Length: 289
Image 1 (cartoon, rainbow, N blue to C red):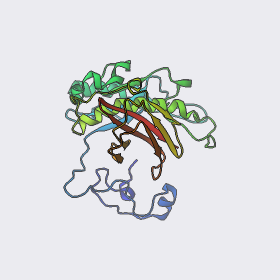
Image 2: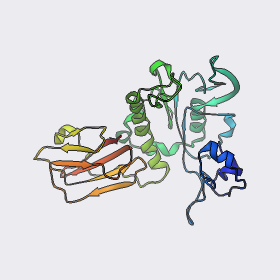
Image 3: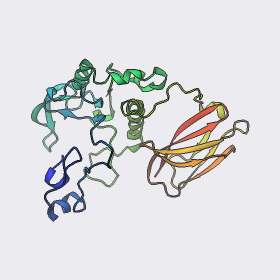
Image 4: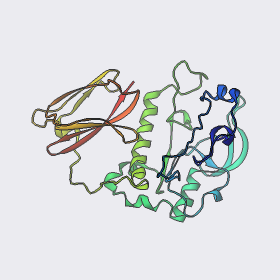
């Protein structure tokens, strides 16, 4: 929710008009934080991609011809936000309570396909889109989860063990597997939708763990991660990327079969390490907790 007097224009180009200490105390936002600020001069604040996880629109006609590409994730049995056009429910102590009719992700994906809004995703080669083959439905920008644990509507979410309510999912391991799928499906679509110079025709070979006898431990890690490969396939260089694709560490002229990857200033979260070898490259997920 964006309250324009407190948070600024949703397009990121409007100032706040109200300063209310009570609001900021409740929201935990510093006074003057707009949540959505104008971009730097020369950069557009227009949206180029929309990403939706378990959401819905109040009316399907709000999504029109020529809209930006849409990537959606939804559980087919979601009891709160329906996957198609149906009644939205809110959770209460008495169980889900009906509110209003909305259109969920599957219906919106069909509408986006009909308008051609997601046609840019057709440019992704099958070999660079492995999660599409695992998708139980066939829409250009829509991934549907089925048979989730305990019929969860948001299986990618989890709470700390001491975080109320007691009914919250505490299984972070399972949730992170869902996030892996989300990121794997999202990444190539974000690349083409945002014009990030996707090199799908690169001549560099994608290697496997077995090709270089890769071993990594521990992962997740707290302070450091140990990586080894065979002496015959040394790592020539590597780079670490955060989940936004920004390089946070770049090591060249390494030429070693072992790496002691120290956390140092890296924050908690998921990263990707791309290791370069004589015959190709290999990218692995790294988590620091």
